[in-house]
Length: 106
Ligand code: HEM
Image (cartoon, rainbow, N blue to C red; front, side, top):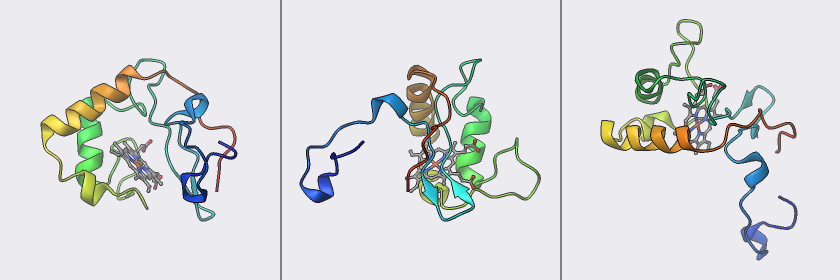
């Protein structure tokens, strides 16, 4: 959100209009994913099993074989326990479903 960078001493604000909808650009080819629930209520369209698999292996079973998520710190987050990852999944299931970020940021 404009004028809300804590790094510049500005008051921090949660971007609730685009909360967890991704769109952060990491170079020209990689954009962070929308983690909010899809129309059927699944975060990023993933079942719990596929969510845990994605974070453990870096491969989203819905992607073509061999494709590995880039930038995404799955080697770190994937070390969490099943209970932790399930808690993150349940949190993501509970937030509002929003469209992909229409204004991808830098
Ligand atoms: C607990 C924290 C996080 C969770 C649960 C999480 C979860 C996910 C999931 C499930 C995906 C795959 C979605 C899909 O394929 O549609 C994803 C993709 C992605 N995440 Fe994360 N993420 C987390 C933190 C981060 C952080 C800290 C960053 C960057 C600094 C990040 C950057 C990305 C990027 C760039 C992608 C897309 C990668 C690609 O398409 O190659 N994530 N994330």
